[in-house]
Image 1 (cartoon, each protein chain N blue to C red):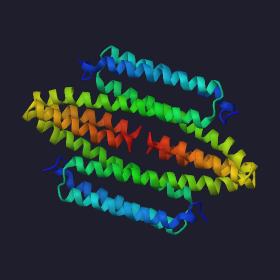
Image 2 (image 1 turned 180 degrees about the horizontal axis):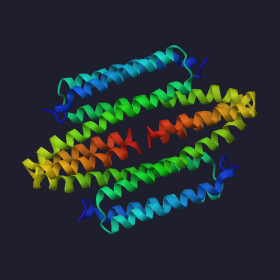
Image 3 (image 1 turned 90 degrees about the vertical axis):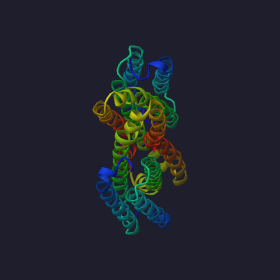
Image 4 (image 1 turned 60 degrees about the vertical axis):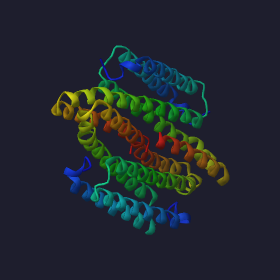
Length: 93
Length: 93
Length: 93
Length: 93
């Protein structure tokens, strides 16, 4: 089971809302809404998506990484290297 | 007409693709896909959304801001202040 | 003269403060300060540096870009393309 | 000892280089260098600072968090909560 399985429904709910917000931005563009208002909405959705990412990182560390570390030092290290790469991609995006 | 009106269809197309990608992330979570793979996809979609934002900023500057500046110095300044706030939100998101 | 020349001293002052903060982070590392406290300071300094960048973007748009647009449509467009690339680098950093 | 103690000298070296780069940006402003060139340098230094942050996160996870997890599940969780908050600040900066 993935690290987020305990709060899975909250994530799918948040992601469905984000999906609706992206659809809303496409509609704004289609209806010639003023650039600045479209940009405000893009910043808000980007933040919402990053917040989901941050939540998933915490769940992953708290379950997959902690469990691997408790299993063996080596498994813990391998999971940390993998997690650090994912965090780096999130910071750079 | 907004600054992006000349390339409007490209934006709606990109946004529909992003919408589909967000739906795909919700499906990944629903199907218990490994946390790291979900995170990789979240970083990719965040980047795609920011790229749309950067494109809209360029269109806005090249049309709305340049036009306002050519109309009067004051109108140019007002549009710049507004654009700078939108850019700040984008940088911080 | 660059777009920031009217507020140049404010910028050099803010940058000297940031320089001191980076020196402070190096000292924290040298004195074995707890990782999380070093990270908190890195986030704060990153934000301060981006805030300087956002200020410079606004000054650049309000002077160099507006002036170029008022000189000719073509010069305005050239400055916008250049500014959009700098903004894209700032958003992605 | 903090998680980065094994690579401490590399970090202080990188931070001293960043300190010199920030001083260089202040000098660029003082010498009226073109806005766009100052902005390019600000983006580069922001990236360098975030790269140090990402490295510290990996060291912290690989030492402090793994060690805490191996000590007890509860200590692991407490360290994860703290690390997740630091990562969130880094992503948002």
